[in-house]
Amino acid sequence: MNHMKQSCRGGLGGIWSVTAFVANVVVSLALIAVLPIMVIWPFGGSHHPGVEIHDEAGVLQSEPLAKEIQAMRFRQDVHVAVLTVPGWDVDNLNDSVLEYARSHQGDTDVPWISTSNPNYWSDGLVILAVAPEARKVGCYFGEDVAVPLEQQAAIQNAAKEQYRRADWYGGTLSMAAKTADVIGRPGGGDMGTTYVLPGISALVGLVWLWWYLWRGFAARRRAREALRHYSQVTHDYETTELLAGTIPEDEPHGAQVMARYRWFREEYEKVTRSWQDFGNPYRTQWFGMSVLRRATELQKRSELLDSLDDVIANTATFLSLSPGWDRVWSNEQGPVLEDLQSLRRLCHQVDSSDAAENGSIAERAKQERDWVRSRKQRLDDMTAGLEDGSLQPSAALDELDEIASETKTKASRLAREAIDADTSSYADERRRRYDDSVSSTDAAYAGYWYLGGGHGSYNPHSTIRLNPSSPAISAIGSSGSSSSGVGAGGSFSSFTPVSDLVVGYSSASSYTPSSSSGSGSSFSGSSFSGGYSGGGGFSGSGSSSSF
Image (cartoon, rainbow, N blue to C red):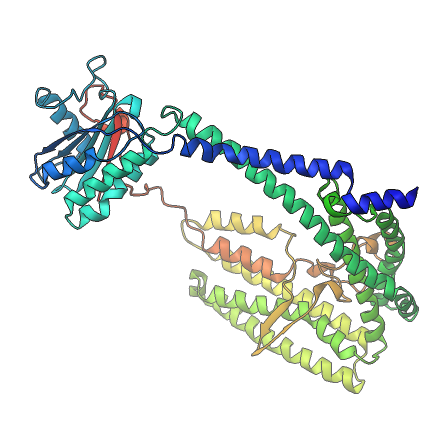
């Protein structure tokens, strides 16, 4: 019976999972399809517009222009009026167009201002206006053919490049063509029916389909990665156990690692049971609701185990100076070298700031740079000492702790003195921002360093000394070996990388309030408040901008 169940699952991926997969994909595609259907229906325009040309500036060929616009197809009946406004003193094109409409009511083919409500343009009317000398362009609409401000901007932008070249004929044609494209979309021109609701539907469909497919593929990918780590831990388990037996627990660093090893053994048993519960999802089963969460959890836990067995191996190798100890030592130096690099970078930033005008601050930065060089040299000497036996591994790790702690202390002191030396009008806010940044504890070491002409990379997850990326840090406090990290072979005092402090200082010391000035856009609004300063309550749809 079990074999049959397994066979059925392997062949179909599970009836329920297949059904759920098909349903999710079909529903998502249906939601997505709503938008293109609404946009492309009806297929093309079927209405030729009425056209009148009022070339008051004398820059157009009226008859050919009218014929070309008349040949265009709109999605609904419209009347297109083209107006050119002469003069260099056209400050507000909206007002000029309205004034022209009011003063030429008997000269237009159709009324431009609505006879039923004189505060609006006539229904079905589109006015395309340009002031060549004042370099302004505008478009105006009856309420039944009005388009949003964004589309008004698009209509105007369609002509600007040609208008800048004094191609008044071509620019006006481009503006008319863009108008034909945006007016009369499905839904009777209603943006909600035509774009907003279908757009929301399509967005929901796209997001859900992307998320649903990503969830399944990500679950499978993470499960495979988790299995790779877990298999490696299982393969090395006996070796890890043997190596752990060689680590001296009377040595502080060894004690801290052994506390984490006890966590390792307990966690390995728990993860093994979790793998048994997880089973072996197949095909569409990967897309199940909880599979990604469980695969992600297994990946994190298996990675921690894999990292920790590396720590155990590194500790046993280094403390006994077994073959490969030099590789472990190089990895151990990584966080210290990265912190020294960050302190040097802080010195450079202080030198380039206003605080450098303070002689004591500049001198302090110089002293810290010299100290960084001396510590880099000391690390090289420590390597030589380990090689010739004059320096013991435990003492070397202790000294790394000391250098790390002193590096952070020096960096914190320099940054504080520099930020306190600020005498600008923004000094108080800069200090507040720096104080806020200091409280951050979420940073981690990058895993690479550049210092003194040299560079290198390391794995912060596998260092003997503790850092924010170390696995099973919680086991230290619960082990009874140390509640504070001091004397436990750890570096709790330098958990936050110095780079985080440098970033906080840099951001705070360079702070200036954002400008309160506007964006400089010349685009006018479509209502009375933005468009018709002297309109006497006129609220017709439309806007203008400069080119």
